Length: 164
Image (cartoon, rainbow, N blue to C red; front, side, top):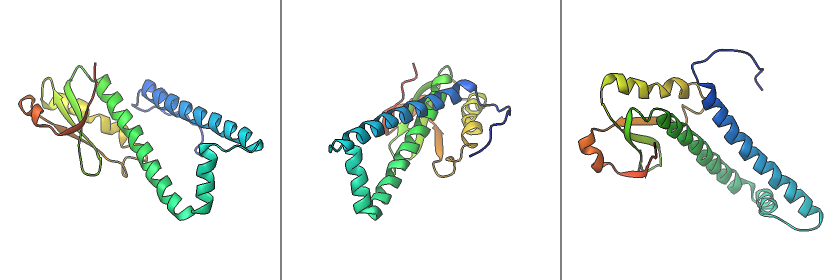
């Protein structure tokens, strides 16, 4: 574990607090489920968590693959939350944004700017200044594609992002 040091970064504390809050809630929910499962196991009842553990112990190879896929899904979800949060913070620049439909469910986003110029594109590309510092950036790359307003209806997407 890394030690606590005081350094200044260009990442807004509010963004970090949001991520920590999401992780704290997830871990709190998981801790509650572990406690509940432990108490019920003491009286002979099993929960879904206990059943998953039993399955893991009886067939570890398949379950390692399933766990890796689950982790991938969760990390992609977290990266997706970061992108959505960033675009929401910059909604004054963004007219529309979409999560593109891709064969491998990549983190690919089509962005239609109110004013599509290099200054506004540069402000959106500032996302990478923060994201590239994360250890997940290389394994889970995020792609932005700028689309002119007149071609927005041609975008094949899995989700239209709510920026309002």
